[in-house]
Image 1 (cartoon, rainbow, N blue to C red):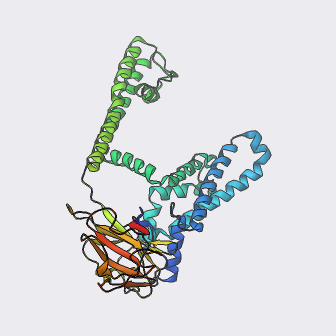
Image 2 (image 1 turned 90 degrees about the horizontal axis):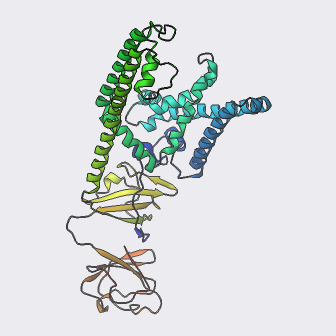
Length: 428
């Protein structure tokens, strides 16, 4: 195996949303589907096609929203109606194609389900519904009156796909987590607010109906007043004029301040608990995992084997596989090929002392050139582990003579330079 002399860590990837389409035992149509899945998945930018699709998706969304806004200006609409209509039709058609591509690749998004169930799971998901409503009302305006103007705003929700960057996505997850944990308390507070709205509406009707029957003309006519009062908005378009009604309105306004504060306090407490939980996790003891990258040659015995058949020692993991321009998740049934770059990781042992490896490249005039290993003046705490000569790996023996161009891998118990100046020296 050939080392690339660099440390690297496994990238942050979701195994359920990434598939290598070049595995030899995968049928051609399945490889094609996985390729399409990577293309439509936001954030997979391992080649130019995936990057371009993300850019086109973003531009289609922005242009569609811009056209929707420009259509509200009558003077612009009068001059450029045909251009706006064609542009909207093209962008909506792109949304439709994107939706059907996501249906086609739904089984890659939900690999644990069968074909039909994975499609239904996507279609009934939040993002699936948003994707459908972003184009469906455009083609069936008769089912969605007024030109489906309201449903055009669902296209704005597609921009959520652009926020699948970890910094924003994690923040959205925190909000979702808090709402789910506190849903019982929030539902209870909302129920109290609804009861207060109904009760205050009925009370205000009984008080104000004799004085202004045209305003409070039935039991539910005061709902708008109770909403604006309890939620402390107070638009002033409907209000009591009798003394009893004003007194009632004052009491409801005071109650509204406290009642509306209930869900606010519940959500705020949930955020405090969530961030306290994150802080306690952040204060936990962390152990490093050390990574090293190696490149497989044709003669390596790992070539052609599945990862599950390698028999790796306990504590050693294959973190990631780089195959050309692709990044392959190291599942057990993945076969290794010549030329693969493998990132190996090793768990640190608690309380263990660090191991320092150094790589020394012997250049011209280095004083180790032409010497046997047993004659080298090195510390007893340093050991030569390996000698790499051209494409060969040589087990170091005492009578091995070192040559210019040899790369020596040494182990030292102490951090720092090993006795004997090296032309090139890099810590692993």
